Image (tube, each protein chain N blue to C red):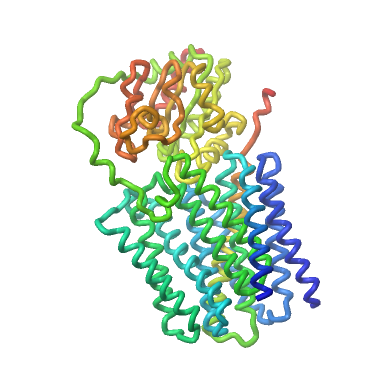
Length: 458
Length: 97
């Protein structure tokens, strides 16, 4: 077919992707955005299938079938708490595809220097994102220990491996005919991906997933340079900048520098700084007492964290929301940017349990509202409400923006025990006079409160 | 060299456009956004089709291409479907204005 027409298909596909991102800006248009993205992808695939170079359709359609057979169940059988894992696996697939194509091109062409440089970049990012995403999946699925594993000289080893990969890559660019170097290059990139994730703990996954998203995009963009295909460049660049922005937002929300993340050095090193353990007094309460206080409140702000997802408590939280709203209590949810295991994770969980999204409020908007709220109910969140971030310059989380739950008239914290959270930092919020600790599993405790509220009502 | 220049131009414009578009996305939708961009990054399927469908491809590159098409298709299909599945759940409160 006429190549000029096919170029136009690619142009339309790029427009589809741009519209997809544009329409994602609001929940009202977001589904239209997905549709635009799907059309874009369809045009890109059709436009490619019609090209004169493509003559063997049997292998391609077999691959389409297998890919759909894996992809459809992956999308529909996944529980919403597992969205981060699914995204990590999906990143791994995309990155693997990109890396394999780069490899095939390298062996096929014996490329010129410019193409070789693009291919080296593509495969480096592709292979390292592949293994890093698989590692992230393992940690999120808790197949691997979620605690960061840190050892002495880790950064030197990691940077050494990356350095060797880059040197090998540069050697391949200078003399692309030295193909024996290529397997080493591949192995180094794969190894670096694994090492990159080893020192990263569960709570830092939002940043890492965003970053891997960016790498996968940049890899596709590099492929665009190698194949001289502008659609790939555009789609990859959109994806790369999207991942990068999200990673930056996550970094800011944790007050970590971007270099800190890039070198994968963040983690647990500061924990030993905590002083001698002193038993401080705290107050605890039963579901009945909690229900009574909530019943008398006018305004309640719920702060959900990853603990809510782990306990699968979101549907019970919805029942609590219903019970309180019915009594005329204003209920809102305060969403910290890094709550959960990927950006926006809490919103998806709460939306799944049918809580209207206009009651999910982001940090900057809700923080001034805590002063006027009667109760802040914290469910499975810890560091994101720790006032030490504001008050204690020596704290490992000093400077991290937090939700001002401590400004609320009463604070209630649903928690399994007094043990410190991920960052291993004690939380002074728990020892305040206005704080009630509600000990127990989030799901059953919230269910208990709902039951009591029903009893009061009847 | 001409290709490189145009390519970089396109890359730069698309990257800036991406920044502007993503900045406007509400934090509410960050998870579906990432899922969507993840699906878009599977545009690598284009390269994979070109490699696999070539007439005189060596068995080595045919197989690599085949695996790449499978992986990219998985990424596309699961990415779009789960983004839509998530977005379907976002509902506005109909009871009050």
